[in-house]
Length: 186
Image (cartoon, rainbow, N blue to C red; front, side):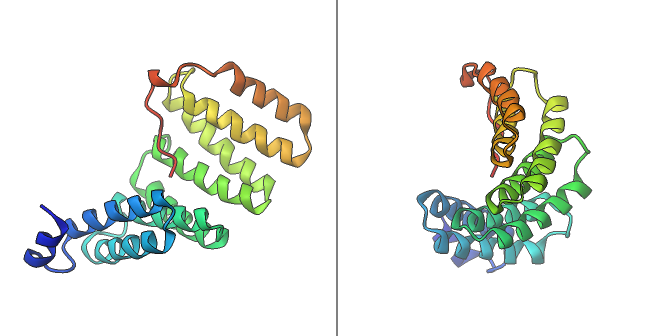
């Protein structure tokens, strides 16, 4: 059903509209039109906050998506605020080694990395990596991504031997990526 039809036939706070708004927000985010992405993600969030319990994964998705837009815009403190809201929901709703928690930790680590808080970035990247080690096969490309992230932080911190250690692990894992689906980290 098209958005136009949904708007005519459904109440303005119907969850089905939230899905459409979310999808439109994703396209605007991918296009780099962050103000339009935020507009649609905020519509999604408003509907989901009314319609869903406070621990529903779709609510976490909305917070995460808004966080990603702010991250893309370089507003890291606001991105962190939304990523942390998403993470709190995921912690309540998911088992401790769920891959979505790794994504959440990675997103928070990425923000700290951008902000230059390398010790916090490392803390969150390592949490993400530990989950990925338990949840994924040993040669999965998402593990390689973790090595790259951790190595990059060590490099920024000036610990070049640790950076090389992790970046060499990353390099060794450069396997054909078509063998495994990547975890979407945004």
